Length: 289
Image 1 (spheres, rainbow, N blue to C red):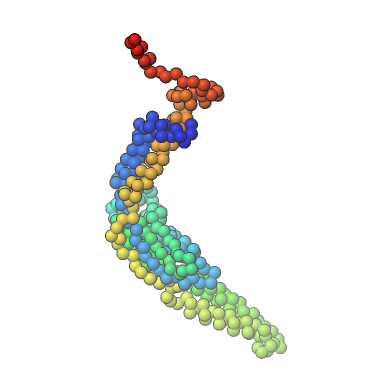
Image 2 (image 1 turned 90 degrees about the horizontal axis):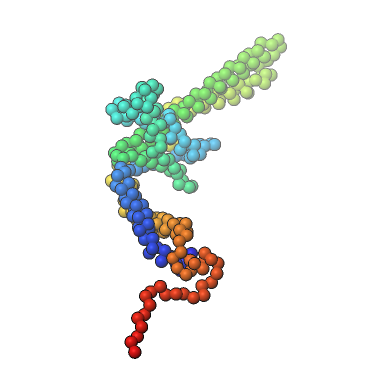
């Protein structure tokens, strides 16, 4: 079976070809019309990563349970009947509803940044344009609040460590001063104690309320056009893919079919050349003298 026989094969098995072709096209078109429309809203934030920090880390924080549940709580989704019923069916009413809802919405959230840019984009896909925008903005605000909290928590932990360190140095300094014959100027704990106090003062300043390292660049707005499904694009792809599948099925069936339909098939089956052909038509009538 060569390429020269392809037109003949497709013509002979045109029913199978058009059945597969039409089936793929109709199924794709039906799914494109039946699936709900999807809308995507995007909020943008300007992020200034700190020392040892990356945009990938910030993106992971946005999609974390802490930020997601905070955004869900801000929108009061757990109080909506639809979400409440789904949560109760899935968990039996056990656990935290905000966390469960956030875990369900996480698959619809995408966070990314362009190369060599500090702009972080939070995109939310939903079947309602208003909800997509509201949840994207809620995630952005929840991230900003969480970022401030994390910075303050780190500063407070540092302050506690410096407090303990300063108390230890203070005790050492006092013990050396209490030694017989010791003079304050001769102790070596004084400079270390002063340095610890300086660090302590700085950490306490950082622990005070401050502006986070990220700011909202642009809030998400409700999209006016759906991003999917796209019936016309899907139909065009289905026509091309369906045609290729139809041709493939036709060729496979032809390969599995061992019937002899012509001289070439007979020569290939016997492995011998065709020496002559006999016309299978009716014999010509004898001519009258």
